[in-house]
Image (cartoon, rainbow, N blue to C red; front, side, top):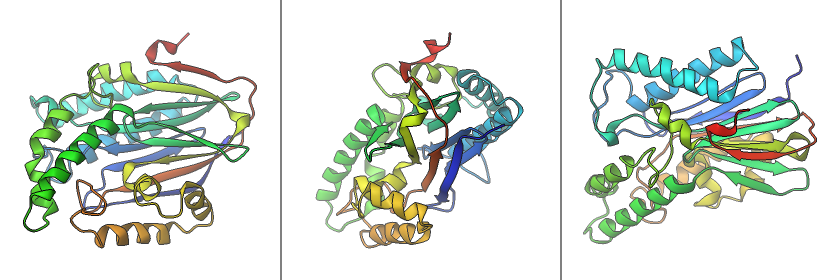
Length: 301
């Protein structure tokens, strides 16, 4: 069977001892997840809840798309949530978690179906879709990004009152804001994100794009796209060029140097010194005729 997705570059660099991002690909399916760092103690002794979630979900998707390359995306995600959710409940002895403490992850999932590229996404993992004439369009972000920006503004206000810069102390002080925002996951007035509750799929957004019009797709977590969206190293097209040229180690070195030189987030406001930085750069080798765009699980025919 012909494969239309070509992996040009991939990487996942942990910002801390535990990497809560996860990437994967099988045939004509590729995905990237960004687990939300927990706001309470982990239920596991050897990993965070977010790390467990993205690892289990990615593993289930790998098995699913390997066994059934034609499976409907919504069905694949529904079955993953059911199976992984049962595993989580067994592992945590049916822990009753407050809303803000439930594990969650951003998701961007690309599949080539016939002559369409199917792009499904939740929360703030972004997909940068490059066309054949040099332009690009961004998918992802949305309400969660707005909530994070409000929390960053609260962080800046705390930092402005500090006698000495201390990012860790400022971050602890805004924990109530972060918990309030996190409790809004998968609610109409909040944001939609991958969780172990199937209600999250009500907010799944899916675009159907004409494969013949697309040259590349870059999936990126916020710890990586901060490079061009906030830190302004070159620009997105330059980053893409450098990834294709195999310069990912030097790109990450630049990212970490910027963060290390600004340890308390005074120049570049952020919640932690280093974040996990992950990406998948895909080339599209399929062709298509007609693009469609629909949103939500009702898209199935």
